Image 1 (tube, rainbow, N blue to C red):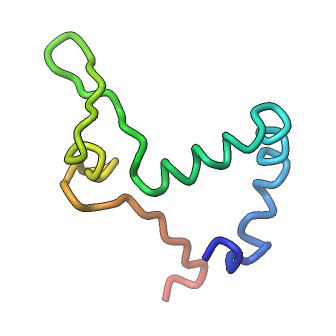
Image 2 (image 1 turned 120 degrees about the horizontal axis):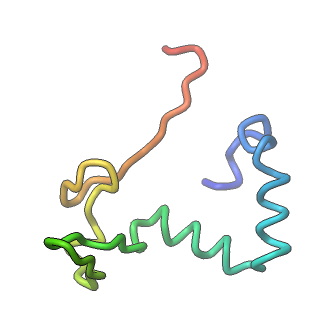
Image 3 (image 1 turned 90 degrees about the horizontal axis):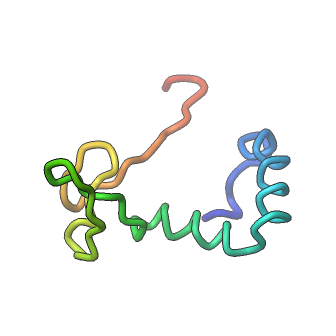
Length: 81
């Protein structure tokens, strides 16, 4: 699916992507894929201190709403159809 993205959509990001690859190597690409798959865990806030959650339940929650089993998705529709 990644190879089906039109060049016009990713061209503005190429310079930044090349810079990140030169600085961090392929691990930055792998980290981006893990983030998109929902494997990145954000800190949970409990009172005044933050904790990292290793539970599968927390990692499968939406980044925007926190709802279990949902994913945040940005849809680009230039014609608004």
